Length: 294
Image (cartoon, rainbow, N blue to C red; front, side, top):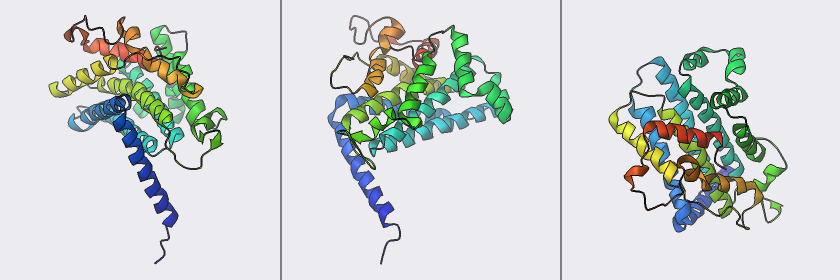
C-alpha cells in the first residue's frame, strides 16, 4: 500500500539518524557534553518553577506562561539543533533572549506585570515592544553601549531574518544544503549560545517567584552558581572558528572574569567562597543577558 506521506516519513527518519549522529558527537566531546548537561539542568529549573510551584496570584500564573514559552523554545531549539537545522535552532535562542529581557524588566518593575497582562496591542507596542524593553533596561542600568541591541541584532541577522550572512548556517563547503546536516562547529556554537541565553533567562524567570519553596530555591542557587563558574576561558583567536560564531565563543569565554573579577579555575579559592548569594546571581546573570560578556 502506498504511503501518502512517504516523503514526510523519510525526512523524519533522516532527521532521527542525524540526531543520533549529533548525540554521538556530544558524547565523545566533554565540552559539548558539559553544555548539553547545563541546558538539561536549566530546563529542569524552568520546569520546577512552572509545574512544581503552586501559583499564588494571577500574576504568578501569567509568569508561568512565560516559563512555558521558555521551556518550549529550549526544547524545540534542541530538537532542531540535534537534527541539523541550525538556523532555525538559533532563531529559538533569539526568542529566549527576548523573553529573558522582558523577565529582567519585570524583575525590577514587578508592578508592570499586570499592566503587560492586561494591555491591548497598542499599549503593548507602546510600552513593551522588544526595543522598548531593551531601552528601558539600558536606562535602568545606565548602559550606553547598546550591547543588548547588538546581541539581539546578531541573532536576527544570522537566524531570524532573511539575510545573505545568515546563509552561512545553511551551507557546507561553500554550497547550500537543502534540509538538515550535521556540522560539529555549528553544533558547538548553538550549544554555547543556548546556554548563554537560556541560563540567565531562566534565572530571571525564577526571580518572579519570591515565595518559592526551599527545594526550588536551592535548585535555583545551584543552577545559577554553575552557570557563572562553569565556563572556562577559551582562546578566542582560534583560526578554525568561522566568523559567524566567533562572537559566541568570545561571549562564553569571558563569563567568570567579568562577573566576579577572577578567572575560571582559580583553585586557591575554596569552592564555598565561589557560591554567590541570590542577589549576586541576579546581578551577574543580568549582565550576561545584557551582553556585558565580551
